[in-house]
Amino acid sequence: MFDSYGRLLQVPGAFRFSSAALLGRLQISMVGLGVVLLVTARTGSYGLAGLLSATYVIADAALAIVKGSLVDRLGQGRVLAVGISVWGVALSALVLAVELDWPAWSTYVCAAVAGAFVPQVGSSVRARWSHVLADRSQVGTAYALEAVLDEVVFVVGPIVVTLLATLWHPVAGLLVALATGLAGTLAYAAQTGTQPPPHSPDPDSGPRPRMPWRALLPVAVVCLALGALFGAAEVTTVAFTEEEGTKGLAGVLLAVWSFGSLLAGLVTGALRWRSSLETRLRIGTIAMLAAMVPLPFVEQVALMAPVLLLGGLAIAPTMISTMMLTEQVVPSARLTEGMGIMHTALVAGVAPGATFAGLVVDARGAAWAYAVPVAAGLVAVLAAQATRGADYSSR
Image (tube, rainbow, N blue to C red; front, side, top):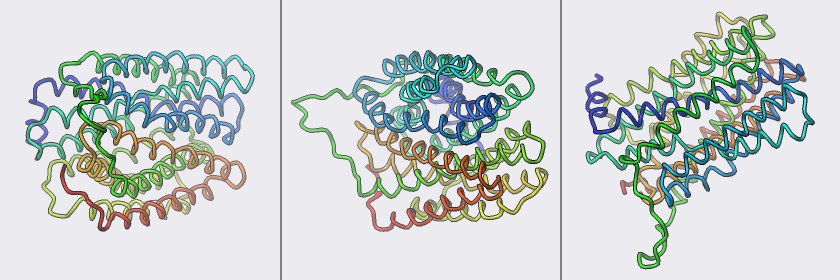
């Protein structure tokens, strides 16, 4: 079953750049949750924690497309190295601002700067796979591999940040996120031999290839809704475990959710599918919605774990479909930018999802807040229907 993954990692340089990208994006699953844990430990307000986390992710989303375009134009190594360096300084300042009780505006400024410079490692590594693979049939397996590694990130990261924040010190998890983000991204950026060539503007080559918006917009809306679902579920699960007197298990529950996605991602990449990507996307969003419906009615942590495990089975296949649809229609000269559009939508959804869920938790409790990811799942299902008839032929 896993022979396809073995052949993929035998491509020269593949194991090194993929493993470095894995380490570099470990911080993705740690910073948002780490901020929630740090702020709630210092202030007790989930609403404030959600707003500060939203500032971080909104800044990331606002500039993700720009960052993707810069990567395409200037090259991955240069842009990622600068971005991760500024991110590291800003995140360090954010931790100090919360710990030393600096003025509220300073915490938002630090969060905004850190979010604005989050490097586009996930988009870049997918664009790099598309560049190095001569056999186009392996692209789907490569994207499935990266989806699985994304889930490894979301299995390991929440556990690490939660255990460090609750058993040692609220700052500890964010410090580990800082260290892994810097080390992994710089190691990835240094591997210039496998990166796609920069596509700098050239008057002799004519205008840049157009972006196929008709095909991309429905997929972007799906990503937006899924981001809201993820953000709401993360904040609400932390609140749920606190209400049950087991706050230290929040990371475990989120990791169980991601582990279900990991298993599904492995199978998705190893099999050869007969159904179209559009059909797989529509089925995936319906499964995501169905998985969210029981959450408001679960009253025990022991029951929440298997429900989230089953729900996680829909995540990776759905996300793989969105990325493969993007890879098929976006010109290679703008592929990182196209991936950045999906990333922007996903991250932009996290902000309102986390904020609304945090406000509902403060007002009514965790059970009511789980209605937020249910609503987001319904939006994803409706948006996936709009992929019918769009041109997703291979580029």
